Image 1: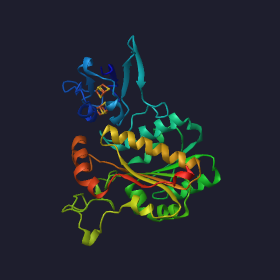
Image 2 (image 1 turned 180 degrees about the vertical axis):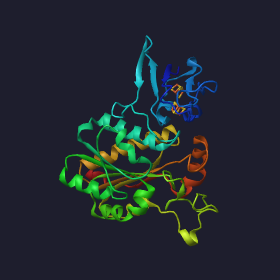
Image 3 (image 1 turned 60 degrees about the horizontal axis):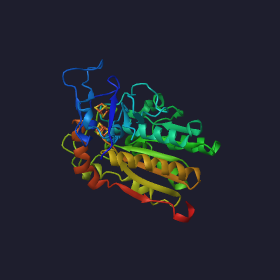
Image 4 (image 1 turned 90 degrees about the vertical axis):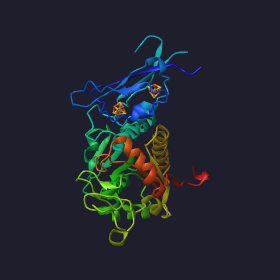
Length: 74
Length: 253
Ligand code: SF4
Ligand code: SF4
């Protein structure tokens, strides 16, 4: 069974580049197109926590180090 | 943190919390992050000295929480040479773009490599002058449109893009040369490994170490960050292939 996890994304650090969204293997991230941070940028958020497998791909690709990853303790 | 979970990835402490000025999706930020992860993991924050260029990354000292020195345009290799010679126990790197390292600073780069100065070059090659508004760089691809090559780079007048990693790997005293990118999580992880390897070789005194990052510039290339990844794959990697160009012989390592 794949591991289970979740991520926290800093709204103000995120620049809405979308790179985490396109590299998440389980497609559990998205840009929030109905809201912006204080810089006027759509930020990424975790849409579907159940799908996150704590692979860290999003955190590794995120240029701005906006993402923190947590893994369920087995 | 939620109950029953453990933290497995967070922003390195060595990367200051100040918001980086780079455009969304720019690999400058990714490489800053990777560089600082290496410094944190190797526990060398107090021993690391970086040299900043002129270009987009001119303010890198605002983000990297290690000792930093700003160099005049193109002269980072000369400044890094001085620092490393005076303080040989430090881990010294220069962080330079293509305008800085391969245009105005070519002489410094070539001669530092020829002398085998024992520091690490981190060379961000995005094929354009990002800071000044997207002009043609020595590394701009053939046919690539920029503000100073509106019909595309023409080799007859501008020559072909300079392959720095290939060039510096010819110098005998250069120990390690690798070209990496950050277009996928796997490649970003390789970038981090390459930086770590370069620092380890430097600590062993093996000679010059040179990491070229095939980087992007969504703003200068006039595309989205996602499109810049496609451009890298379709146009940049065929001309600037990723990989190791030179490595120390195994018995030395
Ligand atoms: S850790 Fe992996 S699965 Fe979870 S959000 Fe990030 S990329 Fe997606
Ligand atoms: S990769 Fe980072 S900066 Fe880009 S959208 Fe995702 S969280 Fe935001």
